Image (tube, rainbow, N blue to C red; front, side):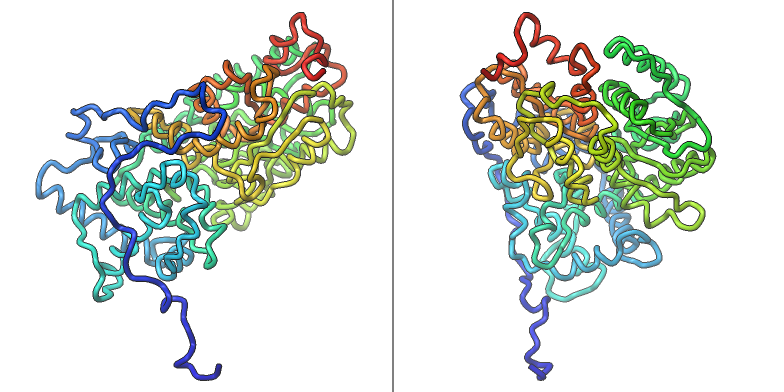
Length: 544
């Protein structure tokens, strides 16, 4: 034990090769029963021939980076390779990578190639175990480039050229950053982090990122106030619309507070909620009014949109938006900021932003889910769980549950208000990503949506079917509770693709809507699908 020559080091048991092989396309593995009614077309359609001139289609035929970035000559190719290596030097330098340098270097040094992560990856499994989607694949490519060209280690088997860089750039957008791989890794190697850092290299050094994340994402948010393009005037109009919506649905006249100074809470929703699911922020207005919460929204630029797409691809953009959120809160002199039902906003502002919010900028920040749990369990609301007497299952947003560690509050709420609640398997910190993580849910250009719904979301759809397997063909309504705006966006696309609402009466929505639906003094259901289903049918008869 004392002989230093007998000590086994982690690097001594790692392999120097493997996993990098030529790949051919094959069809996906079939879904589990019931799948007889589902659309089972092949994995992909052929990309348009003209796309290959300017976009990278050589990886797997799909295009995530929807800007023309293929070099058109040898000089451009050489410049691309040089810029990539310059970016990699900065990425692995303490003077340039101020967010995740240490875990990145450890991940590049100590992977044991055990492949425990492979079976944990929903994309790898759902693709029929395609080698390029194995979590260690892109990591191993970057590791070899780093070892040969930056660390200058001898005997490394890789030749860097423009084609490697082109494919690696696209491959960085075949991972949802769900970090399920790191959870099963015996060494804690974070392949999701390596993917994130790759995206950062391409964005910051090469100016390459999907338009939905950069041009129509963080840049649009900083310019107009929201990644949706909603400016402050449009936001105030939306608040008025929600007040009308609340009155129409509940008969309650509620004045939603905006720009109220000195409030206990500044609530910031993902702005996508206002445009696509206004019943969710409206539900919080109802709940907070009933519970006597001292809160406010903000109409300041960026202050009404919790979205922070920088968390997926660029730390500088993340910092700009996070600092803007704090400035808005300080101007209103609120006690804390509460982030609504949005996974990536929770990750960006509550977890990652800890690295930049210091001193006077260190304002208390938390997710809305523990607060909602406290309200429900304190009996401040008069609730009747039988009003939610239909099967409900829970999707765990990766960035809320696995990253931020918020696991039980949403379950405590559902056990109180949903008598037919059942878990997905696996669930909690072992959940599968919805398939829309890391920005995928908003990336709809070219043919990328097809890859999302057929590959990235396949395991989640499998879980949903299995959670409702005892009632899937019964005709009764079923509800997938997804307390995350981006997850709801992905579920919308997946359920539509497989026609699941029509075939199986499966619906989706947030958590706050279920709470309001259980309120005793509502004469009609708050959830629209219940209103339609209940016409002429006694509610309890669904389960007789």
